[in-house]
Amino acid sequence: MKRRMLSLLLALSIWAAFTPPAAADAGKPVLLALGDSISTGYGLPGYVPGQPHEGSFVNLAANALGMTPVSFAIDGLTSAGLLAMLEDPSAALTAALETAAVISLQIGGNDLLRLAPLILLGGLDQAVFLQVMDNLVINWLKIIEIIQTNHPAAVIIAQTLYNPYPGLADGAYFEALNITISDGAGYITADVYAALDKAHVNVFPDPHPNVAGHAVIAQTMLDTVRITWIQEAWEYVIRFFCRFAPRLSPRP
Image (cartoon, rainbow, N blue to C red; front, side):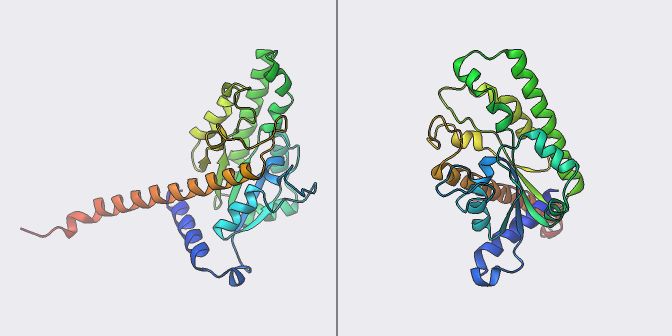
């Protein structure tokens, strides 16, 4: 997994750095977005329902990586809804998954959104919250398993769930899912929760990120990709020297 991820990230870096935009239009690798209204760019100026916004983090990240953005994100989508899509995918979604070099996975906000008034007012029944969170975690694990099993060639960038109301909603409400995401294996984790925790990236009470918020999310994805590339490149160098250094050492 690591060797494949390193190769792909290196190829994407070279592609983005040296390929002229006009020449790159044909045959660019695909960045596939799976998510909800955060991925579609809902709430951005000029947003049209059902049409991914050019200023969404998906488009910003894809453009920076020299990739073609393809979105199957849907406004209002829950983890259960995305799971259902993947368990019985349409022909178009199947084709997109099979051709995607990178898959952006962002889901879970709508699972908790119906609890937002109770979270903010402090009247949330703990048993209700735990049930919702348990279902969300279970769905998320099934989602990642389906993608990894059926589409192992794609690099997955999974986002942690951010707190749209920092200072008002306790970050502990997001902890269970974010720990599950961060502790997973075989994909890259973009810690959007940490990146947006202290930033003013939405206008209360709208939980959706604004222009600045999408820029932060996109940059978090790019930084995560670059850090992963550097870490895996360094590990590769260490393994190389551990394997061949004894043979290269001068004989006494």
